[in-house]
Length: 273
Length: 52
Image (cartoon, rainbow over all chains, first blue to last red; front, side, top):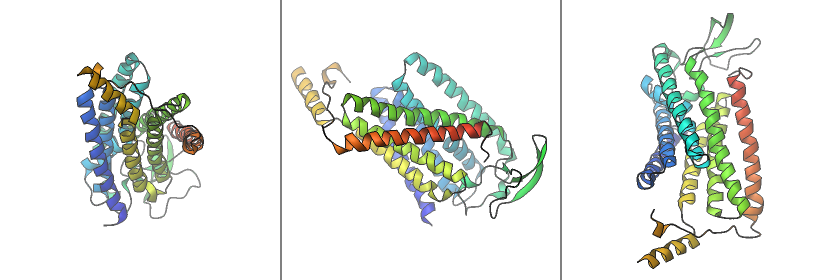
């Protein structure tokens, strides 16, 4: 196995540990933010595992999991956890409803795309993120080396396109940017905003560092994914592992009580005895 | 968490810390710029301005 086949399995293990940790906190504290993060992390873990599996072998339902949970939905659910800490409950309920409906809609579109998958283009020699989508070439644009092309009519024009697993113009692909923009804005934007608030008030340095790590982790996967789609997929698995580790450390640092908080807690607990 | 065990203390950012005076604010600014860039990129894809 190459290093690029091992890294997604390590990311998956980190994400499983992270997911269990967050969901345990939800069971204890009943804070919905932990539930939304837990859902997002479980999706991230499922996506990482699917990616690891697809680097070894093909299975169309593993691809379903990879695209729906790994590429489309996970960032939005992670970001929604952060949003739920920053805005009023009324708005959280509204956005949660929209996110659930949007996720079900994306799942339905993905199911509809399944019979149309072009499985013959699949290879384990490239990351699945480099081969999932068909792409119409612009005039004068050349296909990447080794890519399979075909000619078809698309949006009323005859075009040459690079073959991918999902057919040209698959509706589910149009939903992905909505989820990812929402996820990026709320997860990274929310972490940067929270870090700034604590930093400006000069309090809780652990929360400042934690939010910087969470934002950096989320950005590393966003950046690696963007590079992959531009044809530079070598850094994707490393970016995913860095994201998993940095967000996990950030979460643990945020949850860790500070020395004077421990003193205060113990004092109150002792005085209550 | 019960009222008896709720934390009341708040630790403070150490004064004159290179980490909190330089690295953190610069990181926040850089990450903010990268985030806006990625959002514009994703919006460009969504609107069909950027093809891939």
